[in-house]
Length: 110
Image (cartoon, rainbow, N blue to C red):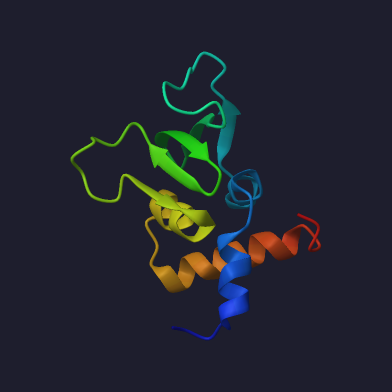
């Protein structure tokens, strides 16, 4: 599984999306024109990172990138580790490291 405990992986997975995005230097803003057809709990966010654009819809810990075709694998996921991997293109181990570092950058106050 890697050099982390199960507790550390859960901590990494639970990093809020805005903490992760800020940590990796992504530009992000809420898409105030978006209206969800299925859930009032969804948060639409436009993201730019290293010349790539994303349009995410976050619902609790789950997310989907609406700019990725519905038939393409990896369009969505759950938690910050999947999100880090999706945005950066890095593997699981490096994505966990990014999330742990993002959490530590907040002094543990999420």
